[in-house]
Amino acid sequence: MDATHLDPGRYHAALFDLDGVITNTASVHAVAWKRLFDDYLVTRPPVPGEDHRPFDDADYRDHVGGKPPVDGVLDFLRSRGIDDLPRGAPDDDAGAETGYGLGRLADRHFRSVIATKGVRVAGDAVALVKVLRRRGVRTGVVSASRSCTTVLAGAGLARLFDVQVDGVLAEELGLPGRPDPAMFLETARRLGVAPDASVVFEDAEAGVRAARRGGFGLIVGVDRGGTRERLLASGADVVVSALDEITVSPGERPLSAVPDALTAWDEIAARLRGRSPVLLFDFDGTLSPIRDTPEEVEMPPDNRRALEELARSCPVAVVSGRDMRDVRQRVGVAAAWYVGSHGFEVAGPTGEEVVAHQGGQDALPALDAAEQRLRAELGSVPGTLVDRKRFALAVHYRAVRAEDVDRVREAVERVAAAAPALKLTHGRCVLELVPKVDWHKGRAVRWLLGHLGADRATVPLYAGDDVTDEDALREIHGDGIGIVVLSGEHGDRLTWAHYSVAGPGELSELLTRITSSLR
Ligand SMILES: O=P(O)(O)OC[C@H]1O[C@H](O[C@H]2O[C@H](CO)[C@@H](O)[C@H](O)[C@H]2O)[C@H](O)[C@@H](O)[C@@H]1O
Image 1 (cartoon, rainbow, N blue to C red):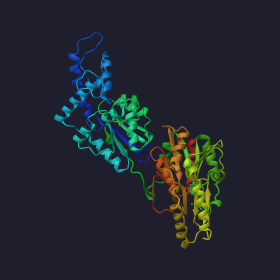
Image 2: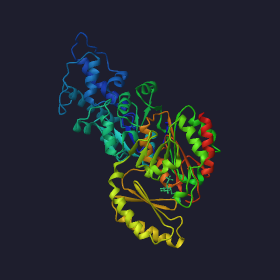
Image 3: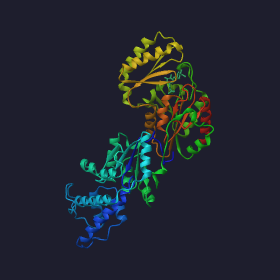
Image 4: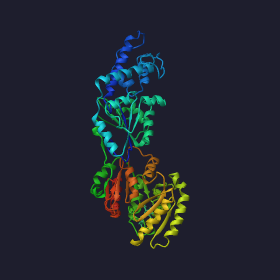
């Protein structure tokens, strides 16, 4: 996906620098600092080796912008050959000849400028924050300034952000300023979102460097005037001059609104060209057509051959709700990765097996007890099939008479309610109990991509038919290609897929095209 197109399925938090991104206060800070340093340099007795020329915009950009005031003071003066100023202490008086004292005075100048001139708000940024919040993205504001609360209140933005990390809090917590990532990391922590699932918007080079060092998922440089190249050189993934260049994905849409993958093949081929694909496929209903019982299912030989060939060009994985050994044996492609039990177990091409989340292991006693109860309770309902996988328990009702289906459903719901370690999920004519932890096919896919060393050149392509595949389709929505395999069993439900195919037959055709395009 284009880096100016944000997907709330991929990025769950957005961190905004305040000064220069949300408000015009970067220029007000520059004015306040100029007043401070020009006064200071004029009154400081001349000393050989010291440069007392007036402070200018480049000084602000290179030594002060985005940093805590005390660091700005010391870094700028050092650049002018002045290195005898003590750091001082946070409670130094404004104007005391220390890093903290001069920093306090700069803040006082800043407040007096905004008291007379007011704060100008960047409408493009505020509009983007509001859209992101409506789409469920958590938002945070980050400012090295001690006046962040005053600025936000003065601009009428006091309630715009979920979390605020500013100069006052940084001082309390002893957080170093940018280019150290500590303030960004603290913001992400307070938002409850991992840095790699968060976007940072920054106009200062020091801030961009901090976000890069913090491992943030996407860094958007905001060039409010001639800084594009410097922001890119500092590590921004993309630079915009206004935040209305950023679009936000609407996310899910009805199956009927999803374009057909074969018709849009040229678009898909263009997205794969020159990149490093990782191809991920669900099994039942995707690689193989649905049958009355799980035992009847066989991998279509054409698809096996296609996967064997694809695995010679790029990583291929089968991501299934089935037991991992079961699906590996049915698919029979030695060079593929296999993810089983809805993401809880993984096997690599060399045969090594990994429990991808400890929650699977922890839930084993609960799964055993639930299996025992359901076998006993449902043994008398004709057509019911209780299918135990290593880390999941499925109850199939495809062959159950319509009038008995509610009985099956109620029994599974009762057992689920009595098992706090398990949660109930639904699929095509199947109810499943899985470990109640934040893990699913989507998390497992992201784990596998990390394990495979995915980088910005990687394009994950995921195809699946069922509601449990939506976790994976959502996960790769922002950086990959999602294909939903239609079946008519879920009406016009919502999906995170970008494209659809009419059924497993059309998926085979798509595999053929992908195979040829990668040759
Ligand atoms: O993630 P998947 O590979 O799609 O696995 C999901 C479930 O698939 C299987 O059940 C489904 O396919 C059966 C055979 O075609 C069909 O009879 C059943 O109605 C479907 O739900 C598998 O048996 C389950 O264990 C998987 O969880």
